[in-house]
Length: 70
Image (cartoon, rainbow, N blue to C red; front, top):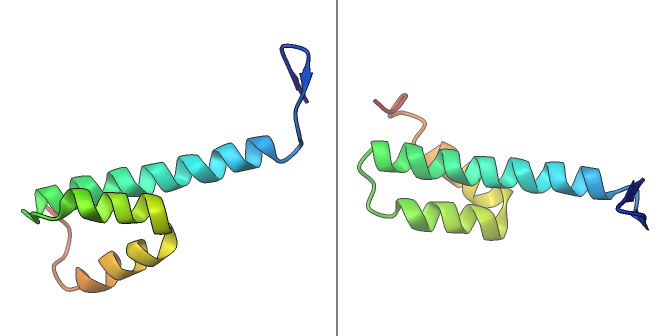
């Protein structure tokens, strides 16, 4: 794959997709936590960006009984 004449590694598109999914998960957690009135919403989002899957699983576990945010 080339971009502006530069050879790019084959894994670049996969890496961009993975980073996109992580950013989307952080945005979702931030919006959901804000909708629930959680004052630590930004910390949940930052933790998701830094540690990827662990905060997502923790957030889902901690809010499993609350149902969808309104």
